[in-house]
Image (cartoon, rainbow, N blue to C red; front, side, top):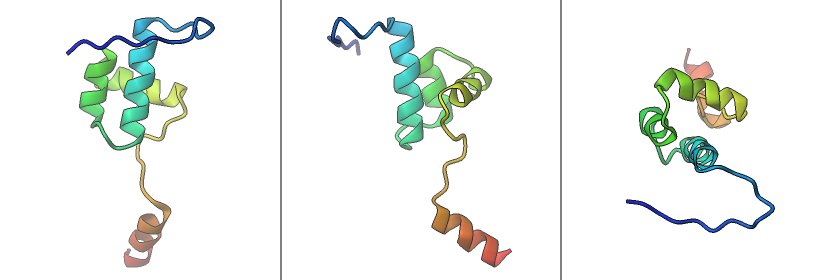
Length: 74
């Protein structure tokens, strides 16, 4: 499926940059797995993990409450 996006002229993104950003954000939202997002971004899983660091997206995204419960159970 190919989609066409029309961005304002002052936003200077290449299609590759758009794919990287979209992949990172969809992963961050939990809508894509790391493997799916890496594929969308055109990267290996390792490359995608490095992208997450540059985009300041956590690789592991656990709610604080869930983490606190895990600590109590340990």
